[in-house]
Length: 164
Image (tube, rainbow, N blue to C red; front, side):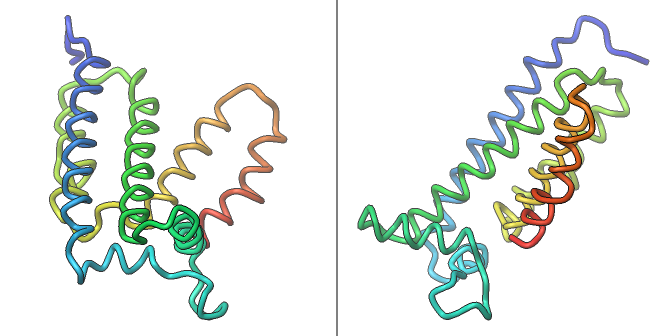
């Protein structure tokens, strides 16, 4: 049963906007706590050698050093930007999908998009790079651009996203 007279794109923007604002608020709150595990996951970099690798941590380290600012603040900015970009890709993934009542219930379940806010320890973890890579791959592969772009994506980009 399809819903009639329902501007889903408008409500989807509002819903994802509220999630983005709440997520940025919680990320800011979490960045001020000294023992947060999601911050420590992003701090891992190449400064101690190649045993504990972390490309986002290395980039954040050099940005913080270049701008002479706190590493925690730079990681907060990176986490916020990554999560907002993820919600942006989710919006474009779902904006043309015709929603029915069952899909709307599934969309608002705590295990889907609200999960990151419900369980704050998983908010803006590095798994977001995997989700972003998969959604982006779906968008690249559905365009009529031949086989070259999806193959480049599968053999070059997705392995890089996976090891981040």
